[in-house]
Structure formats: C-alpha cells, structure tokens
Image (cartoon, rainbow, N blue to C red; front, side, top):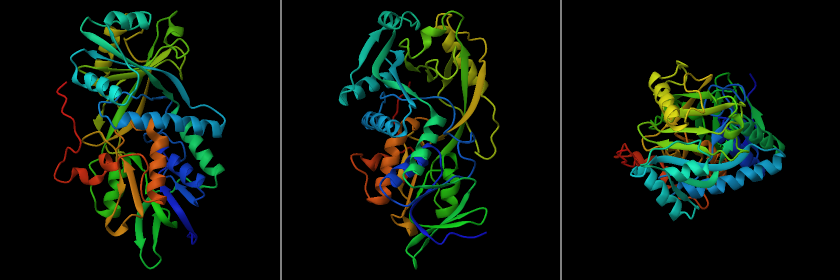
Length: 403
C-alpha cells in the first residue's frame, strides 16, 4: 500500500468521543489534523456508543465539578456550531443514607465549588419529585440543577462532523500497531496493521479500553488501566406513568449510594423505559469479551427498583440490555499525560476515564489540544491525572470511603 509522506500537525489515534473532540479542537485551531479509528466510525465495540450518558457536577473530589461546569458550556458551544442538540438538561439527585461518607463528600464538594445544592430529607424528596422516589427515614437526597443527558453516538458524530468541517481528515478501519519517534525527521511515525504509515509533529492517543495494550506495545510502559465490561439495563415504566419519568416532566438523572452504586437517566431514548444499572462490571479483555451480564448487578438493580420506585417501574426483568466498557484506573481518575521517554512531549496519552469521562469530552479535547499544541493545559491542574502518581503508590489518588 502507498504510505503517506505528508506531515500532519497532529494525528489523533482513536475516534471515540475523546479522540473526536480532540480532532475537532486541533482542527478548529488551524492545525492539520488526522483522526484514525481501528474499527468503523461510530462502532459499538468500545465505550463511546449508545443512547445516553449522564452529565452531573456531583463528585466526591473537589477538582471535577469545575471541569463539568466548563464542559457543559463547551457542549453548548459545539451544539451551536453543529446546529443540533446532543445535551438535554435536567436536575441531578444523589441518594443515600445521611451518614454515607461519599454523599457527605459530594455535599462538601458542591459547596466548595459554589454549585447550588439542596439537601432534602426523605419526605422532601417525595414532595419534590411527586412521590416517585420512596426513601426510608434515614435517607436524603442531594439535588443540583447541573444534571442532564448526553446522546453518545450522536455526540461522537457531531465532533467528527465538526472536525471535518474545520479541515480534519478522518480515516476508519486503521488499527494503529506502532508509534515511533524519528529523530532525523523530528517527527512521529504512526503505522497501521494494514501497512499504512502517517507522519505527524504531534500524536494524541485516545484508544479507550485498548490503551493499556497499545502503550505497552509502543513504549513498554504498563498503564494501570483495566477494561471492565458493563451491562446497561432498561426497565419498563408501569402503564399510565410513562410521562412522569421524562425530562419534560422534571424527572432527574440520579445516582444512589448504598450496598450497590446505582445510577440512571430519565426516559428519553426509548419511550416508556428507564435506564437503571449498577456502576460497575467485571474485568475483561477488550478483544475477547463475553458480552454477558453479571447476575450480581442484575439482582442488585432489581432490588433497588423495588425499594425506591414504589411499584411504578416493573422490576421483574429488564426489557432491553446493552454491553459497554469502562476503562478503570485504581483511583478512578483519568490518565492524561505526555508519554515522555523517547517521545518527549510529542506523544500525549489520555485514558482510564473510569465510567465518568463522557460528560467531560469537550474539556478533555481542549486539554489534549492544549498539551499537543501549546505544551501546557490551561485552567486545569494536571497533577491529578499524571502517570507518575502511580509510581510507588499503586492506588494513586484513591479515596478511602468504607461505605
């Protein structure tokens, strides 16, 4: 096959939401950009597909809410440029025992970041949401207005369209197998399995669940990123109550802290169905997935629906299931850093988004463009995301919440 002799300013490897957002950002800044994807564009084999992801500013760690609020603005800017919506706003409620340490940390984080927050007792939660949530006396609800739903596949498509609109080149079915620094040309050589080679001044690697494999192959570095297979469940709302669980009716995105961490979204993509699932799965090899659900997560989800929705949602069996992947780090914080070594500052890696990164895609794309073009990120403290945090400390930034 013919090989490319032109030199791009930036090659982005991986066309999920992070890579597509990055390509949009670099192209928008006038940089000659190439976006490579190992499978078809908009495939369903990774983490950037499906019909809904939550956006929320409720975090136990203080450095995330500011990023979420900035990302929300960037989602709206991209929507305006595209001419259609992918971000649908509603409130967010976090539920749990009043003594739950994670929930108390969320309240503290909101207050520190000046995110307006309401802390409601079980009766007030019932009143606020017209009796749809049934809580025991010791449970509370933490409500913020900064919630909502992102449409994932539509959002990835939007960033790819905007990248092309700004001059980027996009190529799918291009599995990258090697990345080398050529000192004689002072450039990065990116090679694909089908024999294609591309040159760039800078390279950004955002390959999701394949990050650990590719970085190990390219740099001999083992990133502490473990792919997990997650099963998404959709549950049928009882007849006559379907309209009560929509964004239009004021139903929120939600998260619940207890024996299992449950989260879900309003009825949106499938009328009459709610997406509710356990935030977790089982370790997997992204190339050898089972595509099967864990019985434990299904049982925990059923029990939660039975106890919290007062019979308004059918908890007998989900009517639809989908498979997805998380890329987990030990501390659930992202890895965003230069690869260094022989690559110096010419290769940036971003992964380990641990099931809560999708909402951040616009700001992650901006950060990665900053690192590739300007050699520094603006207005974000990158120490939380550097690779070296795991040296001599396998847990990184891990928080010890015993609940």
